[in-house]
Each structure stands twice: as C-alpha cells, then as structure tokens.
Image (cartoon, rainbow, N blue to C red; front, side, top):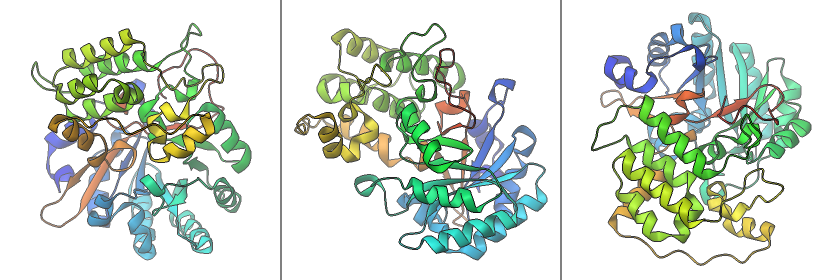
Length: 378
C-alpha cells in the first residue's frame, strides 16, 4: 500500500519529528496484520506508541474494512493487537466504539484486547451508528464500566466540547485521561480553557491566524497553492462567522494561498462576528459552534435562541469547500491512503501539538491545564 511502499508519502504524512512532538502516538487503520506491522515498523523508532483505529464510523471505513466496522470481526482484531504488541518495540494502544445494543459484547472485547497486549484503551462512548445527524449523547456510564473492568489505563472520548466537559467526564468515569477529536478541530485551545501565558482569552480569530502561521511553517506549499487540509480547518475555526457573512464564505471557498486565507480572517475579524465564546465567563454559545452542527436544534434550545434559517447557498466553490470540510475526513480529520492492489487502507494520525495541523486528536492525560500558559494543544 501507499504508506509502506512510498517513502515520499511517509515523509508527507509524518514529516520530521522533533523533541517538542513527544510523546507521540501514531495511529493506523487497516485489517491485514502483516501490512499493519510493516507500516508500524516504519515509524516505531520515532514514536512512543502505535494505536489501532477501531473507532472511525465513516463510510470510507466500511469500504476499507477498518475503524469501528472492523470490530465486527473480533477474532481478527484481537489477532492484530496480539501480533503488533508482541513484535513491536513500542506499546500498542486501541481506540474503539461501543457495540450497538450489546454492552456485554463490548465488555468481552475490551477484556480480550487487554489480554492480547493492548497497553492503553480509548473508548468513544457511542456506537458506530451514532454519527453526524444521529450522533446522540455520549454514554459516560458505559465508559466508567469499562474503566472499572480493566487494569490498563483507559481514556474517554466523545461529548467533549469544553474544559468543564473534561472535568465532568473524569468525575463520572474515573478514567486516566480524556480525548477530544472533533471539538479540538474547531478549538485546539480547549484543554487550557482558551487562556494564553498572560491569562488573555484566545479567540477564534487568533487561533485561525496562529494555525496559518504553523501551517505555512510546517506544511509543503507554494505561492499558488496550499494543502487541502488548510481550507478544511479554516471552515471549522470560522464556522459561525461564515454562516453570517456568505461573501466571505465564498471567498474562503475559492482561496488557494496563505495570503488569501489571511485576508478572509482579517476581514471577518474587522466585521466583529459573533463567536462561540469558548470558556469566556460562561458565555459559550453552542449554536455558534461547528461542533454542534449536527445538533443545532438542541444547541439553540440550550442557548435559548430560535433555530436559524439555513444560510443562502454559495456557488460551486462553496459546495466544493463543504466537500473538503466534511467529505474527505475520517475520524479526527485524518487522511486515508487506499491500497489499489489489496484493498487495504492504512490511516496515519499523529496525536501531538505540531501535527495538529494535519490531525488534531488531543488527549489530556493529567489534570487539565485550567490556568494560563498552554493555549496550544499538547
């Protein structure tokens, strides 16, 4: 497949790992134990653990036979974990979803994963059918049951939009850590409560500008084009403002360079758009957040506002931009490389600060940093 056969693709996916990236977990998705082992051996010397993606609910995961869909093949999943954990020099971790209407099956599987050598388990408290418009609530009680049953560390995932959600999740579940994936795509300052080292609030305009600076520094680009992921992230950072200012939404859809992206951010900031207000004196507005885009009716009810009318559709550029935003993603905004020969797919996701440019799955393993000083994800 592409990852194992192409040094150029591996360089594009992982890049140069520096000290600030550690600890670093590299996540793969696939169904062939030999291919996964070969892929992991390319990176085990530069990371601290290898993670197996058993949580992605997207259609591409069904077609590729990985993610949450591979959970249906329990024996194969256990064999993959046992082989990787016995032959790699770094720990092997897993990220799963719950089985639908069959929690005893979930409990049986997590015990088997622990026995097979899984060193840390991340549990998304939803099943694979709870996705997009049917996302529903995350079940912290079931995550708590998994935590109580295992000896290995357990990380909770799902339903984490704010630092208060992190604290509530830990209180209910007793887990060793909390992961945020989708919410961190919109607000990578989640785990520091949107405070910088001086105690100043970090808003969406600043996050967008800092992201563009990091992307320009670390991603391969030219004077005429940028990687597609840059535009996808900008639509998340500026979600509510672009719904109100559709001319800027269309401009962003047609943007190709960092200069063009920055001009949209600057213009939107100058217009003074109403932001979600993450961690700003209790002023969090769910209905202004990209994270709640599939639960807008519930978000408006919680905020005490009327459900807004759909914004006027843009042209072809807008439709293309929306496809970039949602349709090209697996779990946590990651990129997937299909194997044209064997039908195998390997997904590589880096869960670290600098690489949030490509795939911002963020974990708080210790007490969340509620004070100033760490407004970038760790």
